[in-house]
Length: 434
Ligand SMILES: CC(=O)SCCNC(=O)CCNC(=O)[C@H](O)C(C)(C)COP(=O)(O)OP(=O)(O)OC[C@H]1O[C@@H](n2cnc3c(N)ncnc32)[C@H](O)[C@@H]1OP(=O)(O)O
Ligand SMILES: CC(C)C(=O)C(=O)O
Image: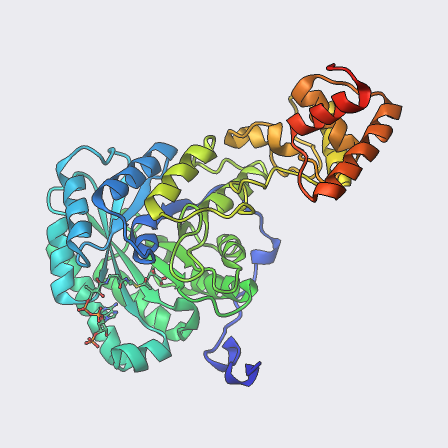
């Protein structure tokens, strides 16, 4: 492998160490979740969502409890523009939900963005981004730091001038995690000054790991450094936007919250550019599994999944945390045995069933699929299936003996033995139907 072609983050930008407190903290409350499925998720799809899909997705997000929703990139396409107009001219946005629209720092596109939100009731966040990392500055925008700072200043002023009282401002320095920290602080100072950021009218400073570039502890340090050094900190909502290039988007988001982030952007099941945006369902249900109210209702996770799969036209992997078809299922004998014993003593109190981090019923799943039998299974699992599916109780000796029959059959076929197949085999072996 030509690994010599790559360098770690320390060779690229200064990574400053904060007065580090995040390793000793705990997450005791959910941050503000902001889904970007209709923008970052949508821009990553081979077939972007049509108006009907956008609307269904939006209604889903409102129904499960999101309070701030990025609804699109109105200057990118007529579909996006028209969707924002639909929200502005109907009562689809409840009074307690704030919508966010996304724009680059280009005067014509800012103008078009502001045009799209005319007439929206309540507050709207205009989210402006600009690439600030050295490679993007040099290669993509071909602007010096000063030129870029001037462009961002002009964009922030334009949004303020055109936006009116109900608009709030969000700024994202793109590829924050690969931008020099002193430049981020300079830009943060600039935009919060333009907007006169205050607790009453805070500016959202969103610090994206646009492309993951280091271990999550580095991102946590970068976020905590900002948390401790940002100018007008009480007038800033510190937001993060992790992607998943290294497969550590979840860890980055969780450590970032420990490090001071108040708001997290992501997509429900992690759709998004390349390997995806951070997965908000996993983040939220990780909190639920630690006894913290996630503030989003995932009690019908399969209903949510159906809509997300329809809108994105992408299937969800069977091993996907919390929602995958197989994530509450054990095929292996010792796991099945432990689950069965756990179920036998589980009451209404604290959830203590081994190998099941949460009760599947919390997300609307039944218990039928918890134990499935194949050649890796043992007597406990087989007995569990017969008992829960058919009320057939095997004695201890029968369990041992019947498991040998099942083992022979599953070794022969190489397949799973379904509950009806186990019942048929039981009848074959014991010559009875109960
Ligand atoms: C990390 C992110 O997710 S960023 C969001 C990415 N999302 C999208 O791109 C989806 C929607 N995009 C689009 O519809 C189009 O790209 C548009 C309408 C925004 C712009 O379209 P076009 O004018 O055709 O330009 P194009 O798509 O080639 O974009 C590149 C131009 O934008 C400039 N640009 C890129 N980012 C920014 C920014 N944040 N602010 C200002 N200009 C920018 C580039 O420098 C380049 O300009 P140049 O042609 O003068 O070199
Ligand atoms: C927040 C914006 C700029 C974004 O989508 C990203 O950086 O990934």
